[in-house]
Image (cartoon, rainbow, N blue to C red):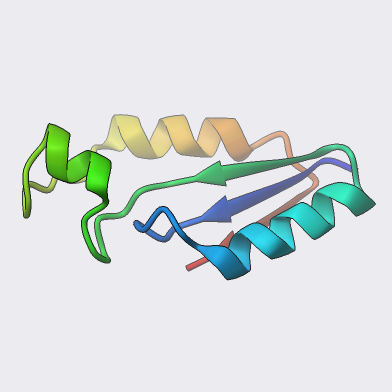
Length: 81
């Protein structure tokens, strides 16, 4: 069974999601974990260095299609937000 886990948090910590993802990966080897940055939370250190504080890009239809295409072949998609 192909499972895809999606984390929508913008922080690089996401401890709870990472723990659950690791547990599910041990139970089902055909699991992949994806992180989608939403800029809804605090700005990460990398973004602070590369783009500056408060510099936010919106999702375009192309971005949404790219995400959907990457998740389309899964039997189960679990999204954490």
